[in-house]
Length: 336
Image (cartoon, rainbow, N blue to C red; front, top):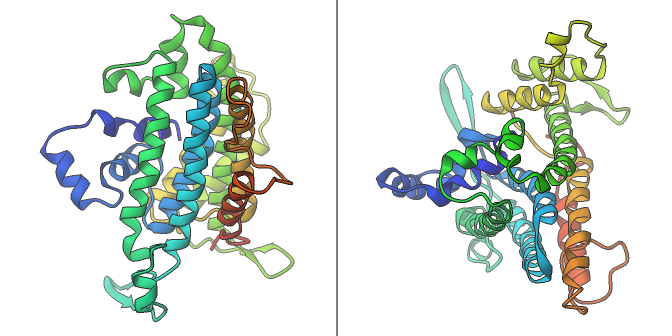
């Protein structure tokens, strides 16, 4: 996760023949390639949707902390509101005309053809798994716009090497010359830690799905890579005070949890976000939106942005709530 935001941004600076070839031939285009290489690997459409949700949970608070003025706040809130709708549409589309699944036994691939697709679904304006790449582009475009604005607000411009310095451990070095940003980053990194833990827990539940209504855990892990994430979580929860100060200053148990979760995804884990995990991620988005909308209303008193309200008024507020609830509701009760 340390390079999550960077992976979503480098595409802006990429060029050359390889860029064009990847845009044409890689899932998610260049953005998908860079996200796979530098942040969280997503092996299928469901995981790509999950990655967008995770990215939004990381991005929205950073946008809210760095925005300047009512006009920028209004633009950012509108982008996030559009993302709600685009992610919901993408998620719903991925469940229609689903792509054939593949099982591999003794190095022999067997394809299972789905029987749930109709001609009407395939040509529906709402899209399907067969139009996933086109719909995904709209989500990626909105995320890129928000990222570019955020980096401008942080006074970070120019080349990719400076963007790569935005890893949390290096971020302070980048902004120390502009010390007024330090409180911003401190507030943001508290959200970053929460999102990292939610991500780690989603990996653990994907490794060890509850069995039966009593929530008991299966004793045999389906994925060898799951042992590392289990050990990392145990090290976080059961940690003790390290006596040696030189060892202690290198401890990053939350980061270790993310890294081990990422390793499980790299190994091909069937990762999903449960309803609880999705709701926890959207908590941070909603919190950021309250700040954006409040700032926007200074100059635009009737503005309705991206705040997720429990009791919305008719119109845009209801649309926002319905889109977010649909995204959360479409997540499984427990990861598959």
